[in-house]
Amino acid sequence: MTQNAETVQRRAPLADQAAELLLARVRAGEWALGQKLPGETTLAPQLGVGRSTVREAIRQLAGRGVLTSRQGAGVFVTSLEAREDWDSVLLRADIVSVIEARIAIESEAAALAAARRTPSDIRAIRRALSARAEQRSEIEAHVDADTAFHRTIVAAAQNPILLELFDGCTPRMRRAMIEMLRIKRVFGGDEDHHTHVELAESVVSRQAETARELSRAHLAALRGALA
Image 1: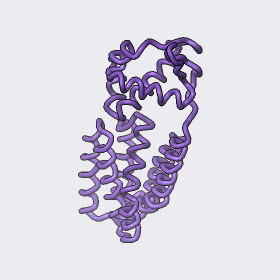
Image 2: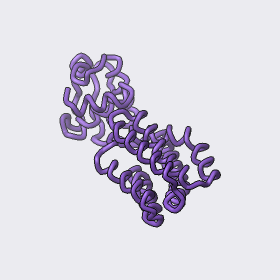
Image 3: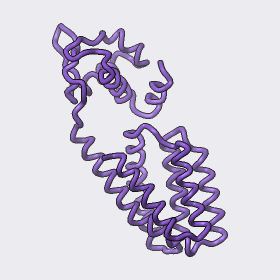
């Protein structure tokens, strides 16, 4: 199995992983439109999963219009592109709503933090930034470290209402961000970390407008990635 396939397998339920890997192979032209797929006993070791997981992956892709199972004949390619199911559409809409709420809270909090941060706030921000840098391989841990970092900036705004709003949103925000990263499948890269370093330094150096814009731009980019 390739390193990319192993990475996908670590980040999502097995049937979802197998379905995405099969879909990628269909899109890559491994099987032509109307062509029959290999049997479960062939696909299972290729995907690194059991035969029951292969069957579930095929059911998922059949539901999305990519494959069709013909009794006694096998599984055939019926489309080279998957239609997006309604649950996925609703999930993305919910994530966008959470990100928009974060923009409203965090961009203003970042500007206030730049004006009001204390020496203890600076230490907390830098500790959280360092902890975030160490969590780049596992989605849940990365989201938790990222949330902790952003909370230190909201706390530095010295506005208890903003902090209360942030904390109140955290459970739903955590779920949404985990799902978003599962959709994107890429997170924790150097560019992303550099963005957070810039945000932290703008707060530390009392650049209120820069902090506001960096926070807004970062979150708007996350929203844009779901379009």
